[in-house]
Image (tube, rainbow, N blue to C red):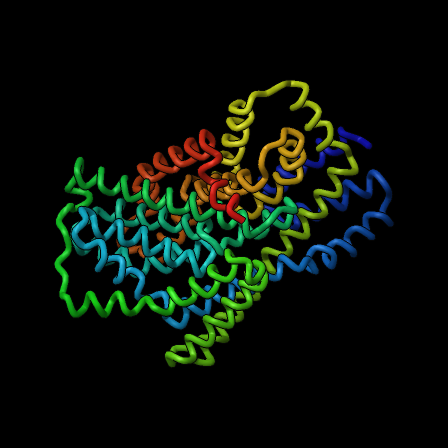
Length: 433
């Protein structure tokens, strides 16, 4: 074993990432070179040839394309289009109704999507123009949607949580259930930000309630039945134990297709687009996962993870000190990397440490996903911000959107503090299984 080789491997990895080398390629190159320097070229070729099959053949990972297909079919067939209207109808008397409706619509879309980018893009197209017309400041309107999009990876089915569960070798279903709590808490605190802004700055967020037509209200609420049916079908079966997370993905995908066909909304062209997006997204995620799996093997051969675990144990870091290190690490990485890369680069190092410290890996997975999603709205590489910029370019610049997410970032910090101070809040629902 050579801890020095492991350290140099980590250094080279970040050098490659700083040079804009794709995450998957950087992981594979560093891992191959590191194993070759330790054991020779032949073993390195063996790991390179065996890892893709052993990783992708994981049964739990087959849930990823299934949930992606469910989300893309629901989106392209228009099944999710009524979420914003239904939220407006239910919340029209609340100050800042449009902004709060967009946040809860993001939460509803998250239940059939699993991606914060897709959630932000879908809601951005629908909600931002209406909010601006109603008198909301463009920066606040776009910032609210960019922040609301992060809920897409918190409320199950979350693709990040599935990948985490595979690498941590823990129950994906329990991580999902922990995500429900953190997702709802995030939505409530975001809504609190809107209410506070309406009170303090009515010029930015108009507090006046929305006018509603009783007929259109009933119609808007009735239009969300396809999503509600999908949610009951998938999560009812998943959390009752009728089927696993992988089976839930398959049931959800088939359910979305059948509902869209029955409503006459799924044309061949829409299904083709949904299928292509599912395949390309799955392939990009899996190749990063292959690289991360190789990187895990490389670090294990060097003994670096064991040395770090021993160091943390010897340093006798307290719970809050260790949490501070983790929070700062992920917040910094989130400023420069996309979530999957940051997740899969750090797990090989952090998981052994947390196992050694006896910290619940289900709670840790939910916390990590929350921290990674904060990175989606922090400069300079807040991906949700750039997505909103693309779909609402006529309303706000990138700088204005980043300015608009600041109050929501403060709410995110409060969510993280609550999660660290009260782990039982996240673990309550998983403990029921």
